[in-house]
Amino acid sequence: MTHKTYRGTIRYTSARPERLGHERGREYFMLTDQADGVRVVHAHCEIDDAPNVIRDIVLSLDREWYPVDCSVRLTVGDRFEGVGQMRFADRHAECETFNRSAGRVSQRVDLAGRVRWLGAHPICGDALCLRIYDLSQGPGRQFFPHMMLTSPDHRGATGPMLFALGFGLEFVGRESVTVAAGTFDALHFRYVDTAGQLPEEHPPYDVWCTADGNYIFLKGGVGGYMQTRYELTELVG
Image (cartoon, rainbow, N blue to C red; front, side, top):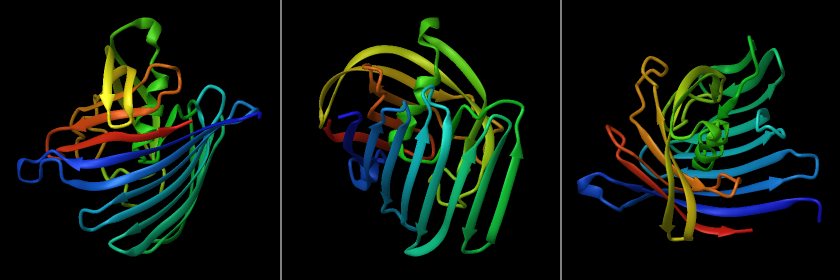
């Protein structure tokens, strides 16, 4: 076999006192490492909180984990919201979208440098993004200016369209983490420095991923106004 596939499930829960531990969604993902060095991410995401969100994404990354292309389909409040296809080159990014409210939208964004990461809003992607941090520098913070999202909404419930921003990653350290899927050697990171980058500032977001070079999501938590938790419940591969 010339490729390797990992399959997993992530449970979304609430951290609010009145709903502590209540399941509020779930995600089913597959990561396939192909013989040509491309990693393809498939993710089906469900958020139960009203208006409910169903998101399906396919994202491909090159050998250095730069985004190559991405497709996103969104359903919000049990209604079709939008579908889009994105492609990334050295000096530009393109998106073709059909959205329920906006109709057909075409984007071409000229770039000073390659887009380092595309946040398409699957939780598994929040761990994969951490690979861009240079671990040789040890614990600390690094800021990445050339990033994009498929939606600036914290639930990824708009668009899909290209939204440019920058943000920081803080490497906290190495830990052993036990989740429903098992016990793993982990890297602990925190998403930071989002002030002024989004319509509503994202609270600090702690994420633990596998320390084996695959950056598979293990668990995460967001405080502030979001109060959410995420946990890997199954991993096969």
